[in-house]
Image (tube, rainbow, N blue to C red; front, side, top):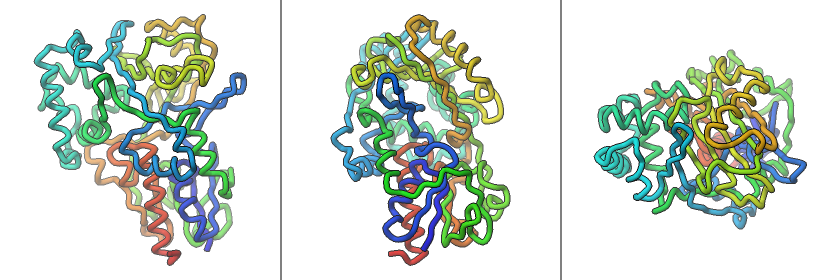
Length: 410
């Protein structure tokens, strides 16, 4: 039995590892193994770092199981990550009750409403709010001021200007499922020295063909016949005739543009994640070496995260222009160009779906009308209503079970 898997991201690698004992598996990847979880190697200082910031949560059972399966559990560390808001060049920490009380842009009454909202969100079934826009949900429940002063910067940091179309289900799920706050911040996990270690071990014993795949009927890839094909890439990259035959929905995607900076200093003493309240080309500042030990890298590492349209905005600007824009903008928050050792720009054209109002109807089943042609990845059920490493791994494992059952491999 021969199975082709298109895409060597976490979904494709998970599916391939789950199926390799039962069939001959070939993974096709036109770009980098690891996909959005890919890493950059700093050869001068001898370390690896993700191109796009990554961390995990205590509830990420599929991811944590894979980390243990590939004998990396001893490298998984948990830290309390501190957060802040940035405004007019100043950082306002928002971790302890005292810091929250001192935050100047919300009244005491607004802070009480925010606390009640956090508690009530955990009791709601977020799927019931899929047809409700997040901007309407926040305004109706919390009012205009909390929307503008607190939530709009968060939404912009995650979806750019597409935030106006996002479903209220996304926010409720993020608050109720992903939040694991301690007294002084949120507890997050990281695979010390980088998630590239997991990618390498998952890919180690697989046949990976690094070539642009072309799917045709009967089921074949680049002219090679297969008994089944699992497609794990973004839906817009799938050939139109295949997409039409598989009856896949039109899903809007956004692009990620991320500046990664190696520097001699950080912007803050101990903050990991800062949401930028002002309108800026980046929506969040992630100071990686305020989360992981600086000694692991020999310098400070800072991400500046942006979201864009696949056909315009920051995504289409040349790297040289983007470097100048990011360096000029981050200087407002205290990072001087003289302290910057290097800057890299990383782009992902289809980094994730926009979880817009009514998105639940677009979540894709693993099976398609094309016999033995399957789809799994960012539009699969485990990645609703928020994509994640955990959701991508779970999608790969679930589609593998479907394939095993339907092809009689169990």
